[in-house]
Amino acid sequence: VCDSQGRLLDLFVTAGQASDYIGARALLSGLPKVEWLLGDRGYDDDWFREALEDTGVGACIPGRKQRKAPVKYDKRRYKRRNRIEIMFERLEDWRRVATRYDRCPKVFLSAIALAGIVIYWPWNSMSPDSSCVLVGVCSFVRIDDLPEDLPGRDKMAEWGEWASSGNASIIAPGGRVLAGPAQMTQGLIEAEVDRSAVAERRRLFDVAGHYARPEVFTLHVDRTHKEPVQLH
Image (cartoon, rainbow, N blue to C red):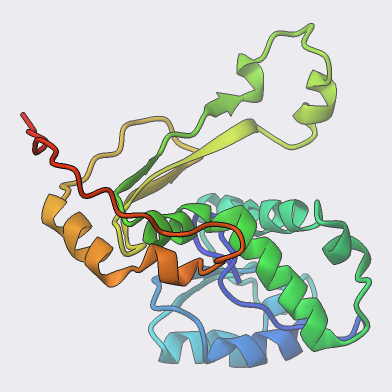
């Protein structure tokens, strides 16, 4: 399961011959509070649609071809389902995920979770460590923006419309997302920043204790007088 930005949210491993229903049933109880769930025809079943409706989630799932009565769905909304395809493509850049070196399902899931954290949630993990407001400025480039003679352009065109989808974000000191991520869209993001939260967070986070490696570094306190910083 991924969110509307294509970020990994939940996983469940099934056997290759297992139906999509197996994974859908396992992940159903852990779905976040959303308005819509997008899925392909493999998830078209009355019990699944009813289960989503009971939880207040709309189903944007095309009907199977063998259905006697066609199922109506928002075709324009359904185009966004490529978010999860892009997510899997990025996860499979990790050889351990693409080839499944790990035989044990739990170990394999751990590898995917680690890849997902590194790929999709870097700002959230950096902000608590640095105890500051983190502004992630990311490039936004369409394939059409690239010169025709750029080496490797044809290969990048296979990715789809985007060479770089953005993901600009503003993260609070504790890791909470204040704005963004702005993915696959061109624009500006803004957020109101509470500077007192930075000082409060730094009192909670002991850098020397968290990274306690006395054989690597030691803590030295500079007690010389310094002028206070003035913000204008």
